[in-house]
Image (cartoon, rainbow, N blue to C red):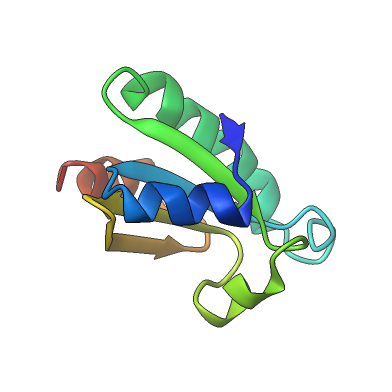
Length: 103
């Protein structure tokens, strides 16, 4: 899974790409225990769906403005550059699978 910069994220959105974005924080990992869980779940999602979807992550420690849009951790699904699903916090596996089915 590739880490995105702010410019790379903007380029994906401008290009109207379809992708999954994992929004996380390394600095808040000790306070927000759900980050540990999503650090395991998201790579498993990529193993299951990565052949048909691109998976990326962005660290809100580097881009704190994202905290205005997303709680940490979050899995955000973009279709043709538009946000279609936002899953904040840890979810059950079937919720992630169902969310990805919108693509």
